[in-house]
Amino acid sequence: MTTNRLPQPEAVIFDMDGTLLETATLLVEVHRRVFETLREEGLYTKETPPVETLLGCLGMLLDDIWRKVMPDGSEEARQRADVLLLQYELDGLANGEGELYPYVEDTLRQLKARGLKLFVASNGLEAYVKGIAHHKGLTELFDGLYSAGEYGTTSKVDLVARLLADHGITSAWMVGDRSSDVEAGKGNGLQTIGCAYAVYGRASELDDADVHINDFREIVALLD
Image 1 (spheres, helix red, strand yellow):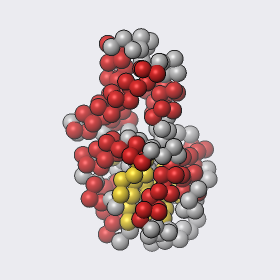
Image 2 (cartoon, rainbow, N blue to C red):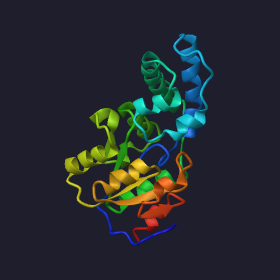
Image 3 (cartoon, rainbow, N blue to C red):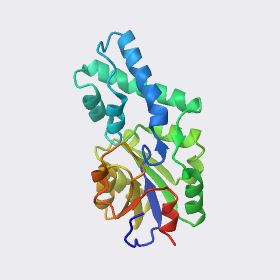
Image 4 (tube, rainbow, N blue to C red):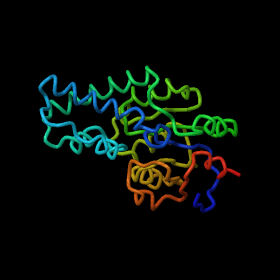
């Protein structure tokens, strides 16, 4: 852990993909099924794009993701991919697929026991974000699950601003693995924690974070 001393917060806000959920454990199979179905329906006839491209787009809004993953795809194909992605993600979660990073649940419970308010702020779809929390038994730990899909925000800065205003939060830590998480924290005057254990983005995306952690449990140590 690389650390500067952080002021103690009243809340901690977490990204979901690549921060709480080790997304590849869910998305590799989902990605395969999405493109298999698109080809069956005649909406996309080329080879399946590398799943690494999709994983590298985590943290973006869905429309931006598909423009990166299949830039040669039609608007109809991208819209259908939206539907299929959510359907197959929820199917996978219901079947027990997808793993949290090590120590996530225990650490969240420790933070909750210390009186902190806990939130999620994700650029994902509402049903996906809430589905992860539900199927992984985390819903009760969070004071709010915020998603771009539910609130129609076009940046995570705006989503976190909405969260802070709704709950009257004046001091918080923003925890995430992508530059959008650091920007969301900095853009709202929050302390930022970069999750260096995640592998979906470039390490340089976290350069401006106040603290880097290599293990989720290190968040508790920052309170001591």
